[in-house]
Image 1 (cartoon, rainbow, N blue to C red):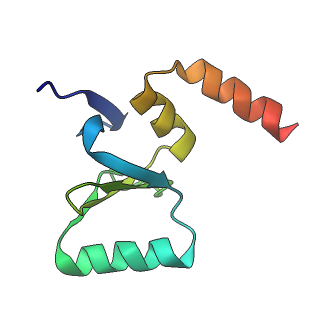
Image 2: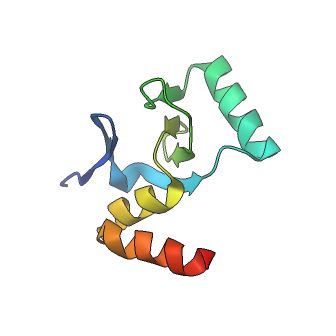
Image 3: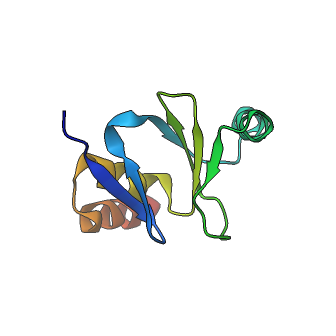
Length: 94
């Protein structure tokens, strides 16, 4: 079984087939999930000291913090060009 790897920013690479969900870090349930993950030792901070913009939940129960937005990460995991995501964000914001 091959492992598709995806670059999630600042030299961090993740196995894309392990990702169950990608979400923003701002809701109370996600904040609790991250706090509990840190307490259990299953939280992996891949932000390189930058602001957390996305939380990835893996099938192993690990919680990964990333500094790229959920939209960009989703496009990278799906293999779509990032220009399409950026254009969609601009069109959606107008």
